[in-house]
Structures are given as structure tokens and as C-alpha cells.
Length: 118
Length: 113
Image: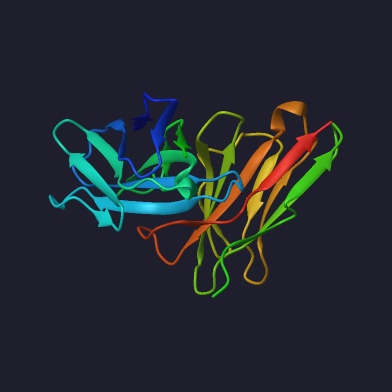
């Protein structure tokens, strides 16, 4: 079974600065999907960014970018020019390309609480 | 295009009662997933359904929990004879296909007294 580990329970960054959230995962599969979701205090899960494992190019969405290191099984999220609205829990998630046995669902890490200091 | 709808947003039940959680997927989405989030934890996959079919229920507790996604109407997650340990946030997600992004609803927070 796949596992996702987020080793930073909490991170703090000054507004307008850059912060990187870490995520590592364990899998024996060669093709899969990785995601970062944001959960603000409203508890709504919001997709931030998605990466297909077969793509070498790192995904980017405006101020959000990832550093995908497939061999190291690492998938970190970089937030540039941090804004107060970025304050939230951030979850890293894995999705297999297989089906059945729980593979259809996303496997989430325990999350990183991001605090933005004004 | 409305997002994934879940109701109720908050549900309070006494031990032994039944809880019914509803999820209406986004328009055009025929795949529904249910997740449970315990306090201070990430979401845990419970079940994956397509219209009238349970595809993968490997994350569902074997007893008291059931899910359905009928041809018409919302998907229902049903918890019979609730216990305090069932208190959690339950999220539904939908997607248009098996490997597409999953879009989440706002969740139902279940409190068992």
C-alpha cells in the first residue's frame, strides 16, 4: 500500500516571502498522480496543483510550483509571494493508476498547517 | 456550474441512531468518492461508487456503514447505530472519470453525543 508522509506539522512564513512544504511518498508503481490540496478554516478541500509521474516537467500554477523528484519519491510545494489567504492546512495526496483495493481513492498525508505572519 | 453539494453540513446524533449523509456530484460527474477525516488527520478513503454500482469499498468499516449512488438522486452514506468514534468530518468528491481530478464538497461534520 502507498503511504504519504508530511514531516512538517506546522510552518510559518512572513507575508510576501517564499515557503516550501515537504512531502515524501512510498510506492512500487511507476506511474501515478500527485496532488496538493489546501484546506482553509472553512474545511473546503481545494485542489492547488497536480503532477503526473510520467511528466518530468514540474507543474506550476501561478504562485504555486512543485519540485517533483521521482527517484527520491519527493513532491514539495513552493509558495511564492505568500499571502494572508494562503493560510490553511495543506495536504499532499497520491493517486494510483490502478483500480480496486483502495487504489481508486486518494491517499493523503497528515497535513502541514501553514501560518502567514503579516 | 455548481460544485459538489453535501448536506447536511452539520449533523448531531445520539449513540445508537442512524446518520444519513448526502452528496450531489458536480454536473456531468458520474464518479463519487467518500472520505472520512478525523481530528488532526488527513482524509481517509472509504468508498468509490459509480451510478448504481459500488466499485471499491475497501476503506469502509465492515459493519454499520453502507453507501449507495442510485440512478436518480444523490449518493448516500449511511451509518447505522452510530458510536462516539464515528464523530468526524465526512467528505464527498466527484470526478468525470476514473483518473481525473476529484472535486470535493464542503463536508458534513458528524457529532455523536
